[in-house]
Length: 415
Image 1 (cartoon, helix red, strand yellow):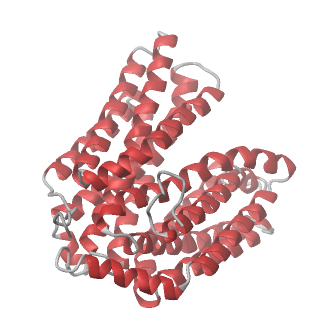
Image 2 (cartoon, rainbow, N blue to C red):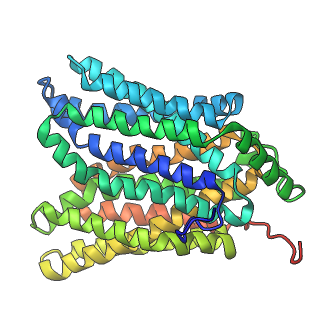
């Protein structure tokens, strides 16, 4: 039965299921993330050690992604997806029972392994159950699940955290458990096999490239997708997340609550733009959508540079902050749907866990490098240079995208 939601209309039911799973995962993550440093500090460790708990999860995601890709190719997306969710759920519940800092650190690291298994297998499955003309909207729908879960999670997390700093870990485990049950019940193996055969048959002769990683790395189109996904982590989860709260307090001399509204503005524009971004990627191509996303990133970061330059004019600088965050929200919408669709085009509907894993690793790598570089530049040169780094990195990625070719192969009319 077709979905009434415009973003999901005419898409296979697996897309709706995967978007729902993404929502529950992001909901739980948004609930638990504020509790992690507080819980870690309860063991009388330094702030650096406490932040290491967050880094352990991200580091293990990055390190284990190639293994997750191999497991996906070996055992199939559905099995690895459910197993990854189960690992994160169990490790999170046990983390809530931790009696020492070491236990908490190890269990969060194990959770990172499960997270990489889920992320790689879910994206690989998403790209295999939709035909070329649907991949942009399917990727946008998957990202929408994460977006709405990520917005809802922190709001609920504040209430749960007020009850106990251990409680969010159990709630997170519960939301992951729900996601795992949804995957096992609604992602039926027989229907998946039928759907995947249909997709491969429909693309026969179009994109029948080998899924071997070294062949992918030779393709300018794959390198462009890697660059855009690196930018997702570097700017969105790196520079923007690390600097905006500090810029509001130290640069604009405003209360911390203003940064929350700024991030809400970015989330709102991203949500509004996801559907047109996905449609554009499917109708006009992946390359134009990626160009818009990267150019919007350059524009958004440049506006932030200007906001810092005139930070003494608080009202105008604050207005520029909100404009920049809105523009960056649009940028995320276009950057998140198009590159994944391009990778799916290159796979031609066939299994390719390793190329998907490397694609995901680029976002994780950007998430690791972004905050470190932003912090260094802020300490040594100020906010303007830190924001400028995001614009310059985007300019490099723009060159990669412009040098690539379009990956969407449209069917001849009448077929």
